[in-house]
Length: 278
Image 1 (spheres, rainbow, N blue to C red):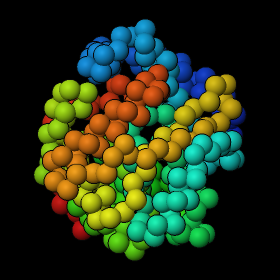
Image 2 (cartoon, rainbow, N blue to C red):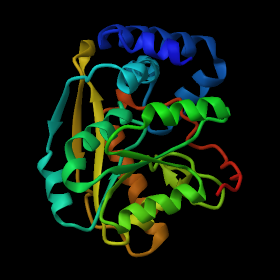
Image 3 (cartoon, helix red, strand yellow):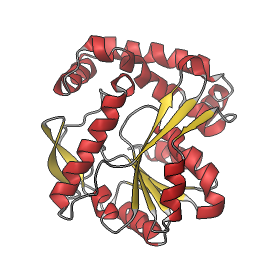
């Protein structure tokens, strides 16, 4: 598998995105379960297939671009509203970066780590480990790079994230990722109850600066553009209200570019039971 990743990492980004587009459509057409979930999730947010058709190809691009991002030459990155990032770091209370399954969320952490780690230390990002042990080890090894630490979606990973934040460091996570049982609340997402992590709200309530970020895929493999936004209003002090606010902020980002959202993600599934680790 590593050999294949290394070989694909040599491909130009435009070619990987082309292969990814094809893979995305083959998956959509060949899997009735995936197609049904994709359409149902989009409809829940008020979209028809004609509104989000490009998202089918972008789902495949998300996978196809990983070898290049993990092992290949640097890709072009454009920054938008980066003064908000500078301001958040200067506050000195730690920074919580939140992004939904929108665009290329892999590049956001890499770009932040590369640009800010020398002055502000590493960013710690939360990820869901693969179920196969060998694949989990491979992903951790490939993602590891200077300025970028990782924490799994387990109680041990939660402790790692909180520890980094208390040291004034930055952390990043996907609040629309379904957490393990016991680590979330049922809160509306596009009007339908979805099991939503409380971790993002709990970290923000500790006084850290909160920024919304997403990485837009540019056409024809030209690279990515990072977008940074501030929440529309400060988070509520009560946890359920704060979690609902974060879901609303994620909806705001998705509506900014529904054509690059991962509509096939099982957002409304039942949470899994966590296997204790460490």
